[in-house]
Image 1 (cartoon, rainbow, N blue to C red):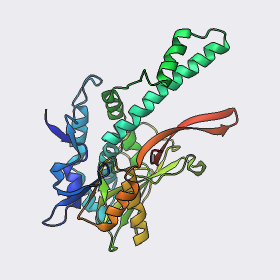
Image 2: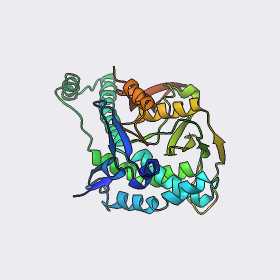
Image 3: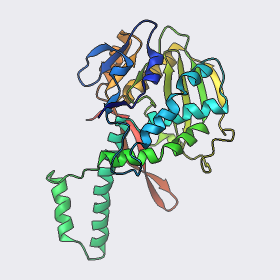
Image 4: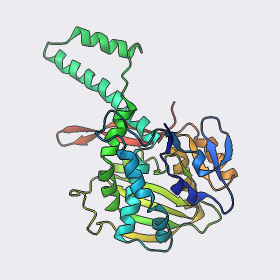
Length: 317
């Protein structure tokens, strides 16, 4: 079984300086090292999802479909062009970077494990209110609380689920508002093994259903996608013009620093730059323990409270 790149070499190649190598930083041990795009962001059999898809190679085929258009599409954006075809090509591969990385698999495995346990608890509470509490179920809950029983979701189940949703995510990105950010400062954008980064919006996002995503495209170019989850969209049909607008902007050094900060926080393990840099080394040291996570929150509603999952970036206590 061969290793497949969940972040394509085609993507990483845009960060390689002329005649040079990438530089990677590990969160787990704070080590850094030079590397080629082919050396990192890969996993054994990563393009195959067995057991839960009728076509196990579907993820690999999806990735190949869009990877071939990445280089000319990024070059077009760098030159100020963003046609519907370019938006489609970038949206398709960005969806992959957003939902099929190891970070996303870990995130949804953890969320699924929690949901199973909380569902069982809720079921037992409802049974108890009806005078039909199940003693065996109660003992099982106590065993979970004591750490003697654990719920384990198959990672491939999550990967299969996210593979099925790739087109839906690409459709939402395609119709979102885009800001293509050109960086002419003395700083450079960096990327990571979980590249579609975001700033931690806090537990309630200020009441807004928007989670902006930053996808660095090269040291001098970054895509800012305004992901509005409340936007109503029909079935995916990429033959039409996208709803969202595209505008081009420049950025100040502080803006580059903030995007790099989000990238480092959202990285699962590796942060990747075009060279060894003290400022990135300092960011890695500051946010080495930060990871993307999900939390269940309750928000006021006219019927009481609504519960929803929110993505955040936090350091474990």
